[in-house]
Length: 188
Image (tube, rainbow, N blue to C red; front, side, top):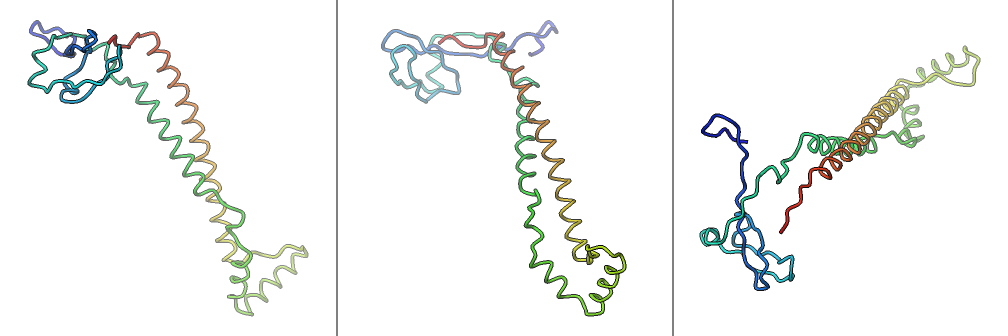
């Protein structure tokens, strides 16, 4: 809406021109279509739209811009939440820990890299606890910490993606219901 000479807001209008087809039907075109081609909805023939300087010679059809339906905040929120859902779900999938992330070969390499004294100290500590489990080496603790951190981030991103997906579906449905009641189609 623009402020008119009276100081009140007035509806903007979008100028459309009626281009006659050989079948007698008039096709409404905007200035953005000047110099292009359009198909006649009546006969289906493709016809050239006059260039912008020649388009002004055609008959005008004024249509209020309100019928053009500007993008609403709800539609933008739907789009943004859909993008957020996709990014979250893809990111979650990419960082989701794989049980094979900690490979036995990596563990063997970490144990092999230890000195005999360190290995013996871990063995003594393990035996003193009288359990079958052994104490994790610093390398194993680091790998376990990375695995658990990735699992937490992955779960958080999955939850965020699910929430964004639900919001996108709900706001998309609300947008569709709004457009269904607004009657936004043009008659050509």
